[in-house]
Length: 398
Ligand code: CAA
Image (tube, rainbow, N blue to C red; front, side):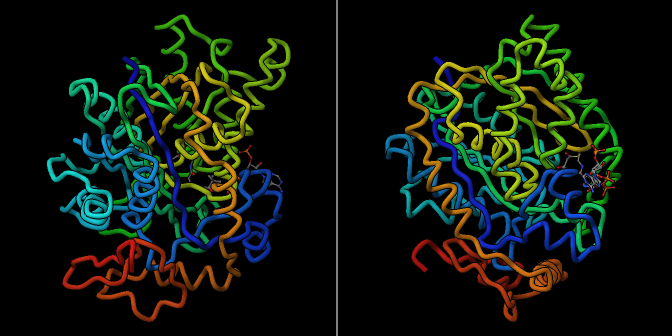
């Protein structure tokens, strides 16, 4: 029986910064951000929004789409992140605590976090697929949630963002069946890392780009060698998207636009453009980025049931994995693209001065409370304060 994703939902903060404005403020040609990096807007999280908030919002949206029988069958909640808020307590436990009553979730669940940079969400998904295979009839909730932050006036500044993706994994999935055989590549390298106690990562930008492309090429070649499948067997390839030009550069390592035209594979590049629509407007969300790309592709309406997809996940440090999947019959009934786009359109644009204020507040050393913040997002599951190290969140009903 196929196992995979039955529902997939996205959460992003209600604030964003237009990339043209950031470019002009930094005395950079806006074309560098829009074309050179492939980013148009960048989601900005105020101090009231953290990775727990975003994860809970995405998970709540998934549970809204999930029948009570599948909620009752929940046996695992796994959360991938590199924006941890507590060095000991799992954010998956906090999300369970925020959602359990509203959605009648069982207490008899395993809940834990996984960490390996941007790969953590994929690690969670594959753990969930294995769990459901080993426990027929059970379901699993996987959450990938991150605030991608490099700091003001840093090289990584235009590649920031924030967001979460949550998915429900079960047998007979109605969105995407995940193939059990995958191709993983691990290499011990310092291309992007964040020592304990530091707020923002250290990154060797050029090295990270090279490691990403090298890891993709190795995974792809190993996949082709092991399976005999090639690009012609796939309707589309989706990539981890630290910025949307990154995936395009990796794709060109195995298929340039010229080669695509010669081989009758222009659809691969066309579908790539469809897969980056949400990321162009949200920016990097580390663990969630690949899955944002998958949602964007499914919502664009070009793929059809039965189409096969290849998905490349990359976490600096570095772990890459190539996953293959099949689009399920009736998948379009499991997504609402118009509502998704409307949520992005409804966000509030910040000025550069406001963005700098928000980022400075959020990056302040962990203190008690969030009072004094100028910009709040008081939607469900927003952070209302930190009290004795205990994080307090607003519930779904205020
Ligand atoms: N018009 C059009 N394009 C322009 C331009 C203009 N006026 N000016 C510059 N460009 C192009 C450049 O030619 C370049 O294109 P190519 O990549 O095709 O060569 C592109 O814009 C970027 O220019 P630079 O290389 O000069 O940019 P930069 O020095 O500012 O660094 C960066 C870019 C390395 C991505 C930096 O933003 C960074 O360090 N970001 C964080 C790290 C990161 O995202 N790494 C990605 C791989 S690691 C990963 O995937 C994990 C993760 O999520 C972090």
